[in-house]
Length: 340
Image (cartoon, rainbow, N blue to C red; front, side):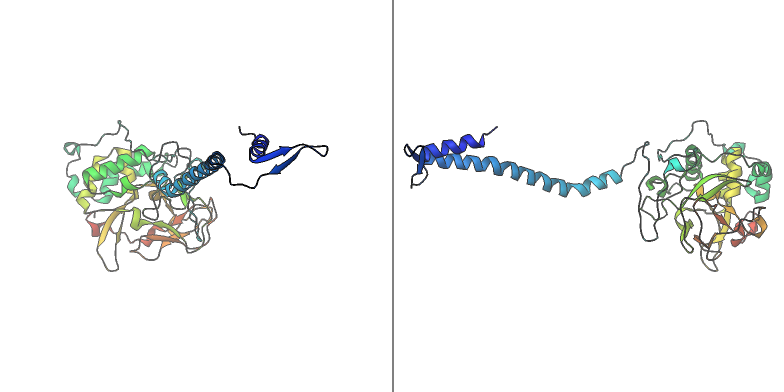
């Protein structure tokens, strides 16, 4: 460590002339240019001060330039232990609900695992004449009415969703890629805005008297987008592919697929198509007049027409309130899609 007072005394004794008298020592400074040794000492002192300052400034500059890259890197990678994927807020704030706040059956992990116990049914084990089965015939074959009455069946796990997705890509369409690119796992829904890892404003849990259902993860304003099927829904090219998909699945999965599938045109006056959602959006219940329960719950999220896929809040929805649509918004006549 440098002793500041010693340096001052040393500089004075070398640059001045000391004389006694008058009851004390008087230091008389000489009027001359500093010696070369003095210049070196001053230059060295300045260097010791300036160099650390330059190094600190340079380090700070590197940190400032490098920070965006660090944020980009951290946002593009996730781990199983993440508490949340991302939280974004705007004027109409779409906030991410932490998985720990939702159902205990669910996780934020996006690890693409598939339970090895799940087996696809080979075609030679399909029922005879499966190619002509109607929608009702399919449900009857699997005794789906019994499963539909079960209000205690658990929420699909991450393995369940991934198994159904894998079956779809293997049996129906292997060009589907958004599933692999989406940071939001199917247990939380999907990225309601493509490329932005924030799920819809709902989560899944068991609904009293209705079995599985969706509930608002935050306050939702009237007119706000609640669900975007144009982002998450997938389409069967024809009825034959839907049959093959369903008969390839184990019994419980087949009944879920039959329960979640619906039909709708994709444009005004367009042809009808078979659609399905393979994420928690499929668990949305109906509060329409034909589905009214004793508690008086009513519809609070519907599309603007029978060919739209975006669902908007018809009124303010409180946090924790069940999200209810009206199944009858989409016209159903299975013969129009080859399942009559």
